[in-house]
Image 1 (cartoon, one colour):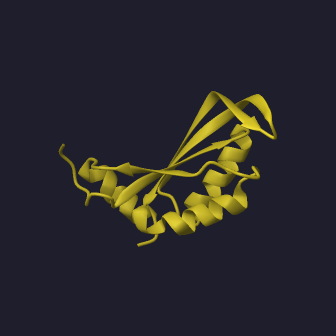
Image 2 (cartoon, one colour; image 1 turned 90 degrees about the vertical axis):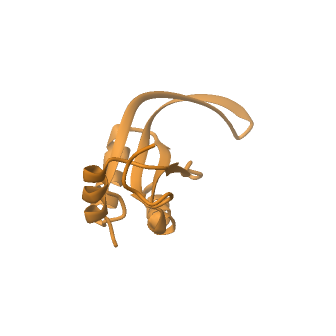
Image 3 (cartoon, one colour; image 1 turned 30 degrees about the vertical axis):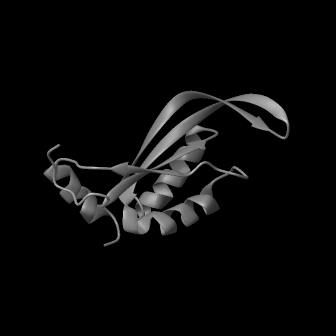
Length: 112
């Protein structure tokens, strides 16, 4: 696997949100505050889960937040403040490698 990253330098924080507006608001704040280089928002999800003893099916959007592993705790704390859910999903997924030009750009977008 080629690329230019130290293993574990960058991660995705995966989350789901109730609407595009909520996802865009949280994403804008994280990028503006240099806690994320970029957030990819995927609309059209259907989530099935149990809440308060009932199986629920809801429309959601997913966000993949690209950030440095060193910023995960700060980014998740801020996302928790911005997130409308009582118990938001915030799952950290590793990025093993990437292309040099993109990773150089991403490094410049987040806190050092």
